[in-house]
Length: 109
Length: 114
View 1 (spheres, each protein chain N blue to C red):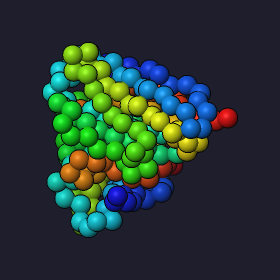
View 2 (view 1 turned 90 degrees about the vertical axis):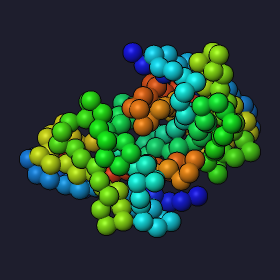
View 3 (view 1 turned 90 degrees about the horizontal axis):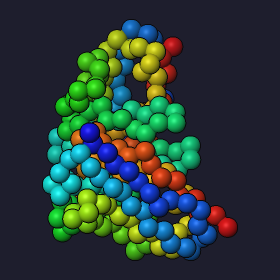
View 4 (view 1 turned 135 degrees about the horizontal axis):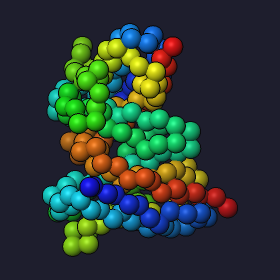
């Protein structure tokens, strides 16, 4: 099965902008992979932020956005807040099976 | 309100079996792909299996093929995961989820240990 790769860790300053990426071992990520992004804080279940590349849920803060960038899926956080410090996971669909990335630990400092 | 409530987790010896259940409410279960996703202690998320609305398609991650089976009962609004030949590396919190819709259960802990 495919391997999905994310940056292990990133740091962003409060109010700053950061982009997390999600890469597939099988080639370029496309909308057909139905990329999703999840936020998880310690002791909590994951929360879905972005689905199907760029769609947001009602609870997704406007400062988060999803896109395809340079053959990868991307999650951009513009105007980071202290409460955005968390682990972020992406997922890709491979015509049935899903694969999660290893997660990016985002520090707001 | 959408609810996904897992049950059936617990402590089991290596080689043993468990059946996880997920009771769904608040949405049309029979119209939804459903997933099991797990998270080992201190580790990341791992997709385990999913099943089509009518059960006609099922997919499992390679590491559980031949040991785990996902199933559903649309009349009971319930999702299941039959886990056989359990190994220590199957120890994890198991989530029932519709990830794209943003719906996750609270998880049930499975511990495989002698």
